[in-house]
Amino acid sequence: MEKEYSKTFEVIWADMDPNRHMRHSVYNDYAAQTRIAMFQDFGLSIKEIFGMNLGPILFREETKFFKEIGLSEQITVNCKVTNMRKDGSRWTFLHEIFKQNGDQAAQIIVEGAWLNLDKRKLATPPQELLDVVMQFPRTESFEWQNH
Image 1 (cartoon, rainbow, N blue to C red):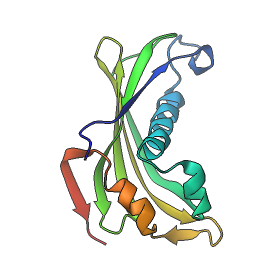
Image 2: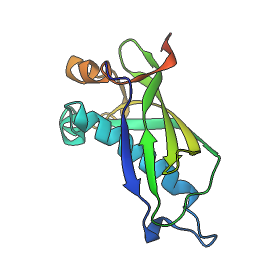
Image 3: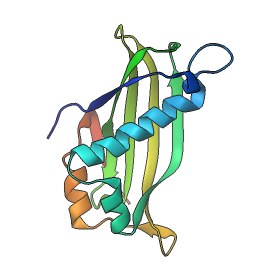
Image 4: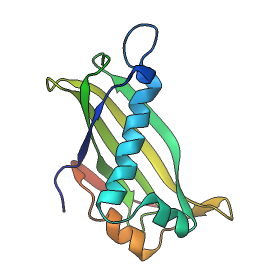
C-alpha cells in the first residue's frame, strides 16, 4: 500500500477571488480532482467507474483554511482514506493542501458513498473497484466503519 498520494497544481487566474487569493470553492475542486486522479493512477479511471454504473456522491465536505494561496502559486494536494466500511460502500477522505513553501494552506474532509447511476440509490461497489480502493493511502488513525 502506498504511504502517500499527491498532485501538484498551479493556481490560475480563474481560481482567484476579488480579495486576490484563491476562491474558497477552488480548494474543494482541487481536492476532488486529486481524488479522481488517484483512482486513475491506481488503475481505475472515472470512465471505467461510470461503466460500472456508479458515481461518487458526497454527504459532507468540511474545509478548514489556514493560509492564503495566491495567483501562480504551486500547491500540492494529498489524499488519504481516514475510514471506510469493509465493503467499500461508505468512505471518508482527508486532503491536505500545501503551499510551495511547505505551509499547510487547508484541510478538507469529505464523507461519501457510491451512487447507482440508474437506480439513483446508494450501492456497494463491485470487487474490482474495492480492490483499487484497498490500495489507497490511509491516515495513521484509519478505522473501519461499522454499518
